[in-house]
Every structure is written in structure tokens, then in C-alpha cells.
Amino acid sequence: MCGITGFVNFKGHDRESVSPQIKRMADTLNHRGPDAEGFFVDDHAALGHRRLNIIAISSGSQPMGNDDDTMQIVFNGEIYNFPELKKELVKRGYSFRTESDTEVILNAYTEWGELCVEKLNGMFAFAIWDSNAKKLFLARDRVGKKPLYYHWDGETFSFGSEIKALLAGGFSHKNLNPRALDCYFSFGYIPVPFSIYDDISKLPAAHTLTVTEEGIRQKRYWKLDYTAPHLVKTMDEAAEELEQLLREAVRCRLMSEVPLGAFLSSGLDSSLVVSFMAEIMDKPVLTNTIGFGDPRFSELPASRQIAHHLNTDHREFIVQPDASNTIKEMAAFFDEPLADSSALPTWHVCKMARQNVTVALSGDGGDEAFGGYTFRYIPHLMESTVKSAIPTALRSSFLSIIGSIYPASSKLPKYLRLKTIFENLSVSDAEAFYQDLVFLRPDTRASLYSRAFLEELKGFTPMEMVLPLYNGSPAPDAVAKAQHTDMQFYMTDDVLVKADRMSMAHSLEVRNPLLDHRILEFAATLPLELKLNKNRGKVLLRHLASRRLPQSIQNLPKMGFSIPAAQWLRQELKDQAHGTIFNSPLIKSRLNKKSLERIWHQHQKGHRDHSVFLWGLMMLGLWENLKQ
Image 1 (spheres, one colour):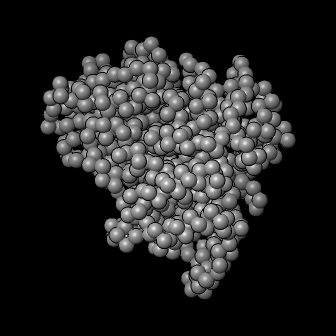
Image 2 (cartoon, one colour):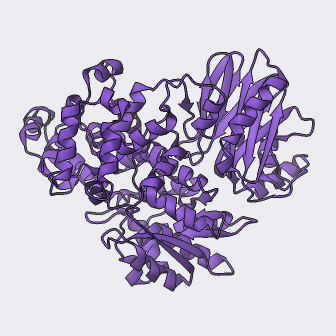
Image 3 (cartoon, helix red, strand yellow):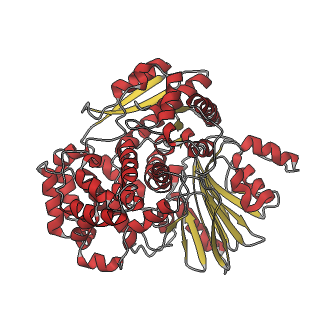
């Protein structure tokens, strides 16, 4: 795992003057690659690389050139099928000087051009500079496990694994993007293609970007097909195929020349991953679990049962609420605000794991691929089914009126609130799904935003980011459309950002077997009944677990990587949160003070749980302080 950065000036630049510049940019990524650094500079391009040694330690230095040095590559990630690709390329006449997957990518690009990405199985972000053609080619993996930011002013193109590299190179005016900020207030994260700055963009997952003097050209190279019929007909047949796929996905991710372990929670996803690791490896798996003093949020007892059954070398850590310094440190590694409070336990589990391993496998991806978000997917399906039987005119008038006047309840989960149900029944499936994603509903947003901020947005709403994904999905039912949207939105821009930044902050590589594209393609073809029923999600994964794990483990409650944020914001972190939020110039200028005070007091008195929104504002304020 590494950090990459670079820039290309098509009018040319002085090599001596840009060498210190590319060095400054790469230095900001030291945490991503503390083991080595490397640079390439010619009359038009400068590339920088920071390396974390995982495989081909003695021969995989970057930037790496081809045989005649007309092409140079910087690469962040792992290609799990590179041995197979290497054999294919050898048969086609290529020779290799190293044992690294980096050289395989470079030769694959020489052989297949832009189509080389379709042959790669892994997590990656890379850039290849072709000095003869004066062309820069960049690519990002299928689901966006590895980040790639860029800036283009029509003359110079710059890129980096993190925003801080571009800032160090002077490639941004650092003006905030109002649409990105609006999305952050609404979702708690900033979706592709936005970044917090208006002149820096993110390359979407499953896309390539070609840069020449004529400009930039972006192209999508992969997407899930939810319309392809699958030959599997029974639960047992599906479980058999998934077992083979997951075993292979785990096996190829055990490739490492450094110590390797796993994250273990009480959930099915990580338990299944570790069960395959235990089956394949010739020594106990080193597992790591995070817990809390509050038993309602602690997975330690359940994870101990799983670890005991799988005979792992198990480690535990309890996160304490006196985490103010840690939270500030976390904020520095995001470069732009992220409201996901589970970043805190992720930070700690990565820090703990790094004491013993350099690579860790995780269970990320199971919820999106196999229908695990039952608190959203089950009610969404039910509402879609009911909606199809109600005349459109009735839905858009009578139900919307009921929804607008029906009082909201703070005591029930969102999907049990009649107000939410009435509102969702009155709009399209896409709009209903959007309303389930945001924690700033349209009426709250309108009253909370300052007049100046609303004018700055010029009519933009975050709904514009979600509806095209949902409506553009070829999936056959509401649940599959929701999954498809989550995979391109929430997972890429929240879950995987959190995992990448928190792991890289500790120079730890995290691998995700359930996000192997072969597993995702398989899951996309599953019928609805193999994903969820009226009560539970991940039906197929549960069936597979019944073949590999004892009943006592299968039925353990999944708590998620959540923290007692609501309590902490009322007690241990109350003063820090209040000071950070209400002293922030950015927040003061965008939000209405009286509306914000009302939200704060409702939370403090226990009338409403606004912890997600308030945590996000705290993280925004901390980010603002750090960037000054």
C-alpha cells in the first residue's frame, strides 16, 4: 500500500524547480508509505511515491519505468491476480525484471492499453506517464477502495492519493465548494465527484482518466449487471457457489511478505472471512476487536466466542470517551470532513492491529452486496410494494398532506415512524430512498441554512446526487436499486473513505474479500428472496454461515462499529462539541444560529437524538481549525 502524487505541465517546466515541489507533495503522504520514497522528473511530468512494503520488498521500488523508460508508473494498492496476468504476458513475449504487481500493470498497459484495467482484480489507484505520446493515464478500482484526487486548470494536471498532496504542491485556491458542503450537512460525507474545495475533484470508482494537451477524458470501465439471469436455483446451490468464490477471494488476499491478520466483530461478514482464513492458513489468525465500557455498544463478549471457536490469536481494546485528542488527530487525516463516528473505533482497531501486523482483512461489503441494511431495505421494499397499489394522485396529494402534519416521534426507529412512512409513500421510490439516506430533511434544511448559503447554492439540492443513481439502475426491484445506489454512493464515499484514511494513518493495509468484483457480480444476480425476508437480511450469507459456524455464533447480535455518540455529546464530549460547533466561522456563516441552538438543546434534553448531525458539525469545526 502506498501514496502516489504527481503533475504534468504540457507547456513544459524546469526540472530543478519542480523537484522540490514533488518532494513536498510526496512528504505529505509519508503515513501511507513510511518505508521508502521515489521520484521521477522529466521536462513535462513529475511523479512521487511513498511506499509501504508488502510484496516484492526488494524489487518493487517506484516510480517504475518500462524497458526503455518511455513510460513511468506510480501505483497504490494490490493486484491479487498479478501472478496469473504475469504468466499471460510472458507468453505474449514480455520479460520481467521484478516480482512486483506494479510491473505487471505497466506491461499490461503496454499490451492492452486502457482496457488493461478490465483484467485487474484488486484495489488500486495508479497513474502512467507516457513521455512519447505526452499522455497521462489514471485509473481507480471498481468500487473505489483506493482514493484519487485531481486538479486541472487547462494547462497543468495534478493528482494525489489525498488532498493534502495537492495543497502542498500549490494546486488549489482552497475555496470551499458550497455543493460539497451542502452534501456534507445532508449525508455526513462528500460524494464523488466533489471535494471540499471547488477546484479539486475525485475520480469516480471504476473509471479511467486520460490527460493530454487537448484536455481530459473520463471513461467508465465496469458496472454491476443486475439484469443477468443466474443459473443457481436453490439456496444450497447459491451457498456452494458463494463459498467457492469467498474462499478464493480470501486466499488471494493472503499474499504478503509481512505479518497479516484480521478485524473481527460479532457480525457474519468478518466471522466468515476469518473462518476461511483459519481454514487456509497454517497458523492461528491474529484477530483484533474494539469494544466500549457501555455493554450496549460492545462486541467484545460475542467476538470472544467467535475467536475461541476459530482458535484465533485474539486481541482486544476498549475505547474510552475521553477521546478529544484522538478525534482531533483523526480529523487531520481526512483532509475534508467526515461525520461517520465509527471512524473512532476504526482508528483504534487499526492502531491496535498495526502493533502486530501490516495487513488486515476486513468484512466490509457484505451489507451492500447481500442486503444487510435491513433498517432501510426492508421498509423501502414494503413502501414500494404498497405504493404500487395506490393511485398516483392519492399518493401525491392526500398522503403528502398527512406526512407533513403528522408529528415526528423521537422514541421509535426511523423506519417505524408513521410520519416517515406517509412521506415516503407520497413520493417516488428514488425520492423515498433519498429521504432515508439524509439526516437533514428538506424542511429542516430550509430552516437551518442561512439566506446567504441558500443563495450560494443557486437552487442545488443533494437529491441531485442520489436520484440519477437510483433511477439509472437497471436493477429489477426496489431493494436491488437501493443496493446499487449504496454501492456507488454511501459505500464508496463513506465506508471506504473511513477505512482507507484510518488504516493509512497507521500505515496499515486493509483488504476486503467481500468486495472482490467476482463476488459482487455474483451477488447482483441473486433473486430478492436470497437477500432478505420480512425479518432479516443477508439470507444467503446466513445460510453459508450455518455450514461453517455453530448456531450459537450465527445468532449473535450485530452491533456495528458504532459508538455511544449520543451519550458522549451530552456528557464527556459536550463542552468540546459545543465550543467547536458554535465558535466555527464556517458554521456561523452557513447555518441559522437559532435553528442550530434548538437542535443542540433538543439533543441535550433527550427530546431528540441529533447525535449524527452534531457529531458531523463537530468534525467540520475540527477540520476547519486544522486547515488554518
